[in-house]
Amino acid sequence: MIKYPGFNILIFLLLLASGCNQNSASKSPGETTEKTTEIRGTLLNGDGEEVLLEEMGAREYIPVDTVRCNDAGEFTISFLQERIAFYVLRYGPSGYLTLLMEPGETIEFKAELEDKNAYSIKGSPGSGLLQILAAEHKKALDALGQIARKSRELVSSPDYTSIKLELDRQFDSITTEFQDYSIAYIHENPESPAILIALYNLYGQGVPVFHPRTDFPVYSFVDSVMMIHHSELEAVQLLHAQLAEAKVLMESDQQAKKYKNGEIAPDFVSSRPDGSKMALSGLRGNYVLLDFWASWSNLSREENAVLLRASERFGERNFRILQVSLDEKMDAWTGAIEEDKLNWDHVSDLQRWETPLVDLYGVEKIPFNMLIDPSGRIIETDLFGDKLLSKLDQIFNK
Image 1: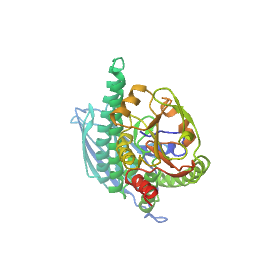
Image 2: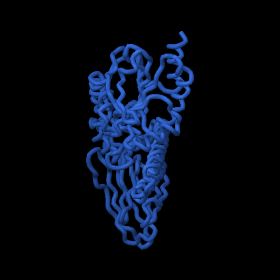
Image 3: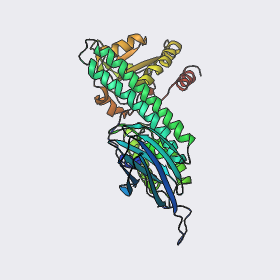
Image 4: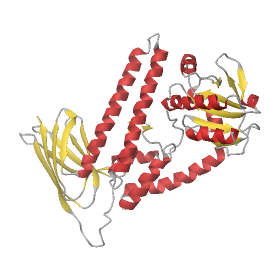
């Protein structure tokens, strides 16, 4: 599960998911490249229905044409287009279709008036790519909606703690799966502006699939390939400029907050499951893996298997594990400790992301870990899987 901190430098770019406004790269001064683009549509039971086409600019919708369907539900929109662009086609009570059209395309569109998700489109490769992405996005949103409804229905259940834990795991699994799909989609279509939509997709208001801070490499990849293939797009130019500014701010923020290798890890005191207090400094003299996790985080639970291997291999040496949980329910926390057989030190104040230790260590996603030497100095951060085991083997089996 990703934490979304107060980092808004690129958030306004989510508007660009609504489209882009640009000049053609191949157009020279005085040259016109306008071509007639046509949409031939059919709406089932759409007799007399109004259909509106708008170009989606970087900051506003630009009306293109409004027509009415004939008795058979058929309509035609024909207009001069001089550049590739995103459009929105609106029809019926809730029909809303995003198109990515190039000049000169002839598009065949069929849809059901009452079902905004039932449609077919031919003749526009870019729009076809958006249709594929939209279908996968809808699957994820529908699955998340089912989880939300189930949570509301069962909130009064005496077993809600365990139910909520399972629902949180399902939520993480769905969002991780769709994020993985979106990354693959972006890498498989690096020449299409359609990947801008994949970059700026949302799970809900204020919950992006890719957050500029935690998923900065994805933003950087989209920026690099779009600058190669579509540097003329206003949306791409805005992304490039804001990404450069964000990178400077992020580096400055990291320098101010992130602890460097060789620095002393900040000490703290927190509560064990039995209520007793424990200080990080109480483990001085040992190599300590400080690990931030939560029972509801699938990635954390998977990484626990690696920690078990590390404990088995090096637990009899001066190696200790201290896990800081970002749970909010005692039962969920202790249940996960027991279920995963985590026989080492644990602390938490059960405040989820509001725990002061998150800010103290600059934790932005979990799992997050830090390997500390016997004098309390930081050796390295974010050591996961074989990388952690290899580092410990290097330390203890020189």
